[in-house]
Amino acid sequence: MAAMAGNRALARLGGSSAAWASAGFILILLVAAIFGPLLYGSANPDTISMDVLAPPSSEAWLGTDELGRDVFQYIVYGTQVSLHVGFSAAFAATLVGVLVGALAGYLGGRVDMAIMRVTEIFQSMPNFVLAALIVALMGPGESRVIFVIAALSWPQTARLMRGEVMRVKQLEFVKAARCLGKSESRILFSEVVPNCLAPVIAIGTLTIAQAILLEASLSFFGLTNPDTISWGRILTSGQRFIFQAWWLSLFPGLAIFLTVLAFNILGDALRQAFDPKS
Image (cartoon, rainbow, N blue to C red; front, side, top):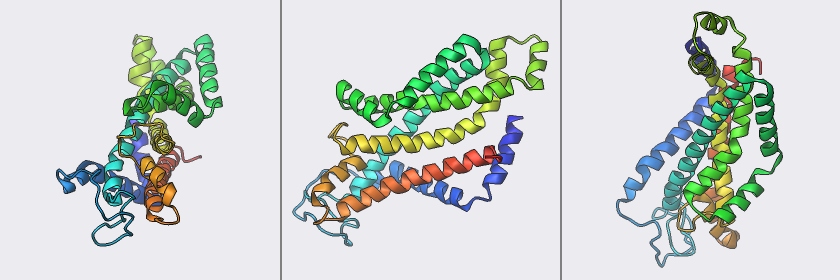
């Protein structure tokens, strides 16, 4: 059943040129993150030079910053951080959301009510303010940023999973599995959950975009490790030279914008593909 729904969704997704263009752009980012640094060999992206605030040229495609560092090289290295934080935080948030939402939807009653109240508390608070406060208290570090973003992002997945589980558990194949003597835990994780994961994939893609944007915002305000190369860090240095060296703000900002836009378009296309009525 889940396989058939997935095939139909992929068939509907095939007609979306924007979704395929977004997927292609994301693939380019993945290639840049994995193989891009190999192009520079052992070159240190923090190496300074006398060619400071140089505009884009054949030597430095996206110009240099106030210390003579190559902006293009910085953006390539920053792709690793952004994608690592985005995918890691989204995976952790999705995993927690699936487990919590599945239990809430399947057990119902007081368990469901308690979990939903917790998700409402999380969703009522401004994510960036709370993330900034927690990171400031815990200290900078990529793993801490991933933990904070994941901790703030799981409620939306949990609520979606809960609704899907409540719908699927009423279907005939679940009743048939119960008549065959399968335990409730086995029915939940082998029958119900696999048939609820399709829309979760879509919301997970949107979570990646939110995580990348939140990490860039934290980096911009200096709340992440200053030794880590990230797009937000480039923007921080670029704001001081926005009228003198426009490329310092334009290109990293464009990288953040296009990346978040690509994940949002792909996630929205997946959502519509798995749920045509939307």
